[in-house]
Image (cartoon, rainbow, N blue to C red; front, side, top):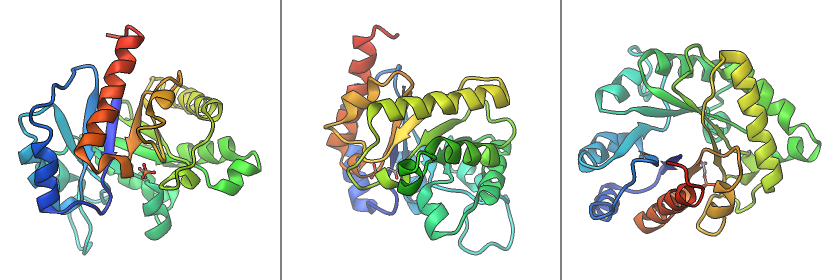
Length: 248
Ligand code: PGA
């Protein structure tokens, strides 16, 4: 089970310190992996603050080159250098606001994998594709066009665009069906099973139902991960889910 906290462009140094102070007395489980994705400028800072805790820190994006004249970009090598284990690639906000297309996302994902980072590759349809019954087709195309080589240690996050930050989520049957499809495509493509996370308006009210969906292996949480109390409650829900289902 995997809990990813995508802070996006939120929390400053003071709030990050406050957040991490609230983690110190918490009893983490070795069954649930957690990774926090802070703003790039605080990756190093957060990494130092949680260095004694079983929490990884990752980048919210990375470039497809390790060095070069790319003003404002962050290289996978730099993320790895600062102790990152994971990087999110292809988040819909990057696709929308920074015009990253499947081709570029594949390059970024490949570069990250080649630098020994584990990628959380985001895919997800918009509302009109969901309404027209084209969601699976859309996500399959994204997957096939974005998947880099050697993806074995990485993860997929299914994040319907219309669900991110809106409070609306697909029904549980739709989530299960999409995850099942994604797993099938990955298995056919790389001959390996990988974890598929659900993301989009995950919160304390729906976390238990989402974790109960058979093909969900964890969650990518935005807004509800910004307060330590909520982040830990989501983490605890994952631990309890495993205990309930006797998964050790
Ligand atoms: P949200 O964001 O949980 O605030 O909807 C999720 C994401 O964009 O990763």
